[in-house]
Length: 84
Image 1 (tube, rainbow, N blue to C red):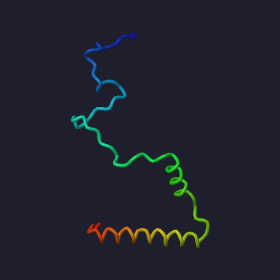
Image 2: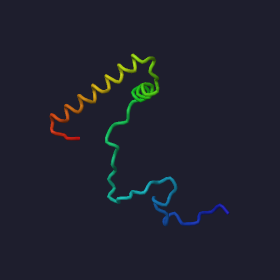
Image 3: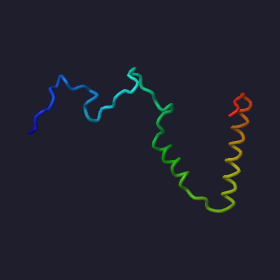
Image 4: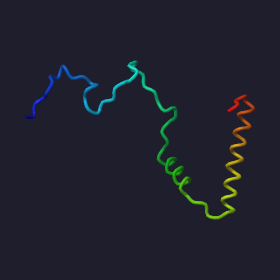
């Protein structure tokens, strides 16, 4: 009733539950390209996204600041030759 269905030498790492098979087969792992944020940074970013705008004046100030940052980013990209 509770015995193994296969012998231990027949089982492999890819047949065990919870194991991840390597689809490329080359053994190299790829990362997400950036480090994991610290808890403090992640919480601050989450709170900044969730926090509602208090009044219209603050809303307009934030929009102007965001537009200014986007224009600066585009200006730097154009200066370096990136046309995105």
